[in-house]
Length: 156
Image (cartoon, rainbow, N blue to C red; front, top):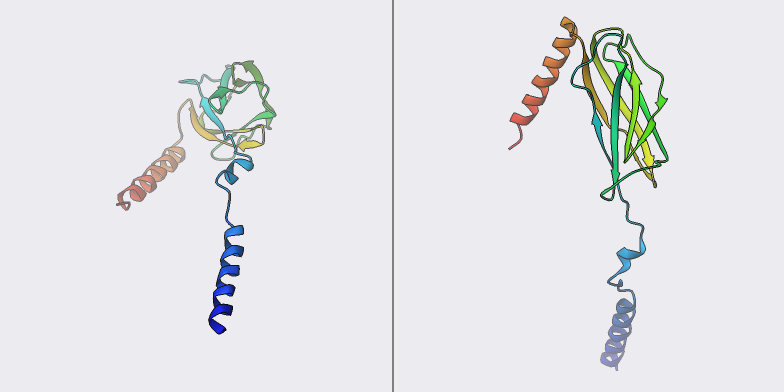
């Protein structure tokens, strides 16, 4: 009698477990993100007080992104002496967005792009040089390179 109850219990338990198994295509029910990707294009050199154009090319799911939800540029100098207000980019077409700026002082600058499209948000950043670097900016870059080299040496 105990043997029959035990076998019945195992049978019922296995039925319950099999009812809880996942469907093979359950992952397809969830939204798959198509990440936004970017390439920041900076001129090879900058001239003092001359309008220069910085561009970003946006792609998503292998296609150029026209009509992005938003694209803004933020630019600042490394030493903190210059900071431009965040500005909306101009849509050039074919996934390209741009901003034109004139830089009145030499140094190490950064540009950060704030972009969003179809639920994907990115904020890539790139550094660039206007004119000549100061001694402190050169030292800053050299320290950054040393840290990178130290980090790479320890990876095995």
